[in-house]
Image 1 (cartoon, helix red, strand yellow):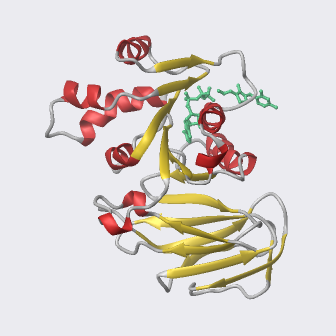
Image 2 (cartoon, helix red, strand yellow):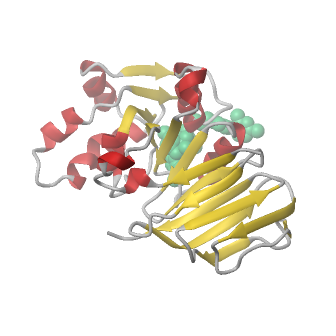
Length: 257
Ligand SMILES: Nc1ncnc2c1ncn2[C@@H]1O[C@H](COP(=O)(O)OP(=O)(O)OP(=O)(O)O)[C@@H](O)[C@H]1O
Ligand SMILES: Cc1ncc(C[n+]2csc(CCO)c2C)c(N)n1
């Protein structure tokens, strides 16, 4: 089985040149308060999308996160490549503003069975060649800490696109899927994340999980909703390893600046 390596270097302001990851980041902004590090994610991303009302957030809140710069300059510097969704939340003046600056507007109001995040992830996958998909990582800003149906819908996108690296982010924590197809090594960026973490079985019971580097490590342990799941765990090492016979969610706290 292959090793899959994970590291939250996208939260580090200046990645040292010799540590520059080969990862290509795409950013999706959802319709929730922008996390404080949104300008940093924007800078790291090669492709930037807003899911419907997420465009209002970039328009309204990006200038608030960069208060020492001229607001209209901040707005025009942070122009999304694409706005995709069912367009029931974006304000008309925001559509006009970004379409005049060249943003591609995709109205998928005919589809009321998939979420705006799903539509954005599908767009990115269709846009990326199979070769590039291996280095693709989709960062999703504003995915957690709001309406519970939206949060679960966002987690479901991790499961529906389990072959794609997708990271859900809020100001407080991040979540991603550890597919059962790989061994996992998680490199902890201790200046910006941890120590609180969790490993959560999603969708199906887990026969066996084994970890290293946690205060409460698992050793061939069975986890299931309604039984044992690992919450309020603590990272104890810079390198965490996880091996499981089923898909797992990994979550870790993000430190306040
Ligand atoms: N409170 C929230 N918590 C978590 N994610 C959210 C929240 N609000 C919106 N989102 C995410 O942002 C995306 C775009 O939000 P938007 O409000 O435009 O969606 P929507 O489809 O109009 O939602 P609804 O009609 O159910 O209110 C959603 O698909 C969802 O992924
Ligand atoms: C069983 C079922 N439950 C809810 C919805 C509603 N829904 C799900 S995604 C979406 C689009 C949101 O932008 C909407 C309206 C549905 N279609 N099917």
